[in-house]
Image (tube, rainbow, N blue to C red; front, side, top):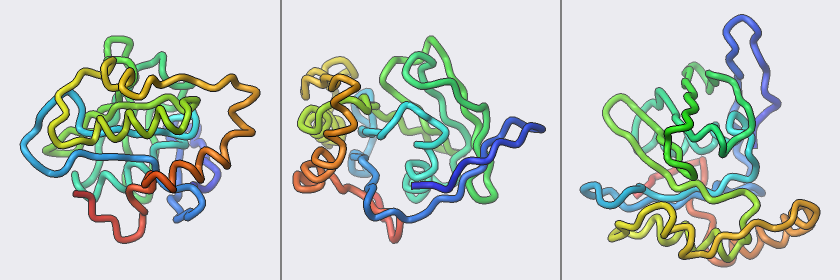
Length: 189
């Protein structure tokens, strides 16, 4: 997905190089471009709770729609401790965690636009995650975060089973149309 992160002790910035990994498609569903409706603009199913490692591919896809990304805000309880800034290519993106931010969401901010994404737990089953992402990315969706997560009855696998399910879950996800966007030639709706 990305190269090994490098932490710069001077500015607490983690630097990433985004690589095209066809074996790990980005699990993202965005609403089509249209006037804003609802509480979220789509859904994202990360593979881990390491925000700094998960963001580079997401931000490279979202930058096609939004332009250069400047900031990402997230709920502190949803992610492992992380750095305050990441560098992707020649851009620095600030990360800001808040306890007051709605749980299970991330806000991605560019110069003139903001996208709020439903975040499906990395431990969710494939079927539940797929249902939640499809609902979050539906054009007419106006549901709140809790309702969207319940739409797929998002449940986590026990940690000891999660690793063994990863390959089969990824294959089922792709067969159900889960490969929404690739990095190369992305043209988000």
